[in-house]
Image (cartoon, rainbow, N blue to C red; front, side):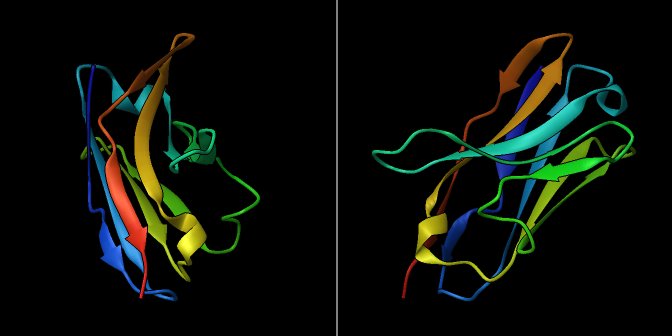
Length: 114
């Protein structure tokens, strides 16, 4: 299983970013995918998840601002982040939940600052 996240960067408060995670090594369409984040000195936080059928769930802090989606033909899961604020600054990790095991990719840094 390989997961490669991309799309992080520096953005001003109120701005937007789109993260992508390219997956390989498993039958992508079958499994739950999602994003977590971890800020310095804080616990890891669930951001969003999406089932193989496309059902989604979101952490309370991002509801209404973030949108998770997947493209089963391209084996990618995306996270559209809008109305970003400094509290969204963190390393964002893509994960795949495959038969009871969570697989993680390397994170991508998102920094929200003026």
